[in-house]
Image 1: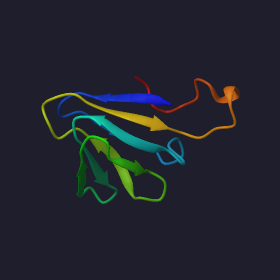
Image 2 (image 1 turned 45 degrees about the vertical axis):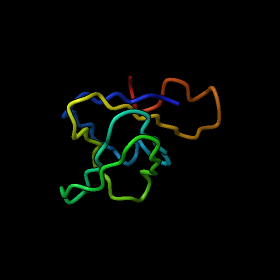
Image 3 (image 1 turned 60 degrees about the vertical axis):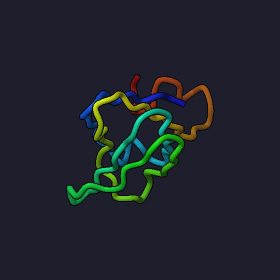
Length: 89
């Protein structure tokens, strides 16, 4: 499990191959899902959970001024995948 920190107005791209089966939970602030066609998606608040697989999301964006955090869970077979998660703190 990793924590993604997004400062106000920050955006992070979602690369489908790297975020395969990722599940996120907004733990602080608000996060907007940006869709593949460039259209803004829903804005999720604290405790909102979301899957990235097959959703058409191309980026996560913080629409506010305050820092937002998202806990990202990516399933894996265990310790052999340590350090290979796409999300960095």
